[in-house]
Amino acid sequence: MNSILGINTISNKILPYTTRQFPRLVRTGASLTAPSTISRTIIPEETNHSQSKAVDRRRVPLRTGLIALKRGMGPWFNEKTGETFPVTILEVNQVEVIYNKTKAKEGYFAVQVGYGSKNPNKVSRQLLGHFSKAQVNPKSKVAEFMIKNENGLLPVGTELKANHFIPGQYVDLKGVSKGKGFQGVVKRYGMKGQKSSHGTSLTHRHGGSYGANTTPGRVLPGKKMPGHMGNKNVTKQNSLVVDVDAANGIILVKGHVPGPDNAFVKVSDAIKKI
Image 1: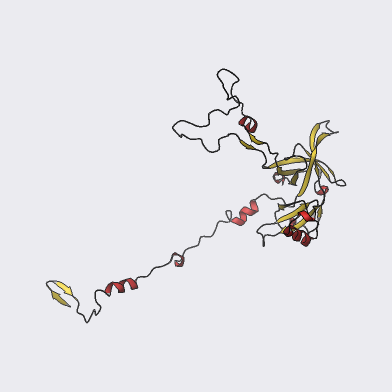
Image 2 (image 1 turned 30 degrees about the horizontal axis):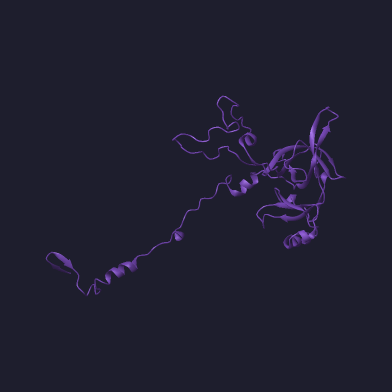
């Protein structure tokens, strides 16, 4: 090593590379480590907060429900109590099991059922193959019911009748509500409206002020305003089964049922009564 003017230098024998090659050696000597190759400590998931435990805690019926057709309403007289109340007539006709879903294949347990019969010429080829595989007639309505475990699965082709439910039992009813079209806030939300006189002009059925001043200076999301009413999926829980006529396929439930007459309704065991 030579010292020239107090500066240490290295001879060419020790460093035969030029200054142009030296930075290249530094760059090639560096190495990058991908984040995926870094060893990490995996913390096991807590038992009570695991996905499997969440599925087990979920309230799901132990058995399948069925599809019924809403036929109308009428009065019912209770001879024991002397009480008269309205009931809804549900018809059960040719309800059969079409397919079983398992957790290993679909990720959950469910039973797929069909209602009634339909002209094969009005059914797609895909559904015709689905029905023929189950050896059942083409159905006018198909729905599935999620169940808790494999114990609730039924053989394909099993017919479900009205006596699937018993009088005194509580059921959940799912249907599509009647469509009312575009409605105002008085009909849609039951608002009071404005005064009939004393300065009110052309705003008798108005909802009042919709916005605010400079802060926030906008209409907040979720504000009740005029819009489309009805035609939504509605679930009525804890409906009492008043009577069952298995021979004629009739189920009488207390009170109203979502949807108009001749509409399909899903009937299942009440989830809050399990």
